[in-house]
Image: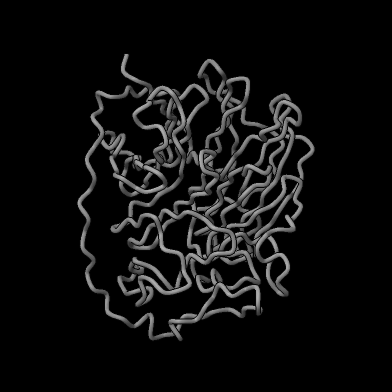
Length: 387
């Protein structure tokens, strides 16, 4: 493969699938240098309140205007936490069929910014069966503990198996939404193929329309929903209103996890460019960088397994304002990523003292940091300043 190929030249010619050569998989697996973990935040600077216990594979958290919270469980349940902090014993009714095998299931939940008027929420989940499945995005009205007027907005390119599906939602300043989609694991080369939506970030209207200014909308043969391509497994998406940037955190295999700042139409390299090793310890690719591919803001090797992303804009922890929060499954912490003028200035670890896998993190309207821990007995935690 020509390392100088410009895979971003989508405006002038259609792309065909770019397939990895066997040679890229035959490079020896040189041991990577293990980075020293960043310092831990002094636990005396915050207080951890356990709000809910016993959640079954919790995945995502969202806030309703009246103080209630929504929590998804990957096993296919949407739960409501009351404003008083109690968990409604009855799951929300009216959910569509959800494929829950393997890593699949109910994933992200987001509340319409016009919820007071529309009453609508957005959900992502794995749709299909073992033969063919992928992410589906729907919206519905939440009324009296059930979903009504459910609308299918988008279904990603089908794939076999149930792993590596990404699926996070972020609302953008113009009212559209961005949705992350995994590469399908065994179909990683498809992340470079603009004809499908595997390994992509897509941009849609909240009514399922495709924005005319999407970067590939006019390209023959390309999926017009695509915003960016060349991603592996993006499980963190956050829009930063302070500078209008869209940020994502994505899993590599053994290392090569990335924090990226997205630019419409750009290619983020997977699997042609990566700093990680494959699960077999072979090199995924000989190239850690190439012309025409966007470099990450941060790369984490060994893998921390980033599972979410939030921008801290609250008042309870003014010393962290503008920092990024990245829950990490493998590292069992929440990375606090400090920034100045868009540049990374340092990292610290929150909640590392708990030794629990962290699945999602959100900043509540009151400025508290709320975290879902992972697993069959997950918890909803709230971080506030010490008493």
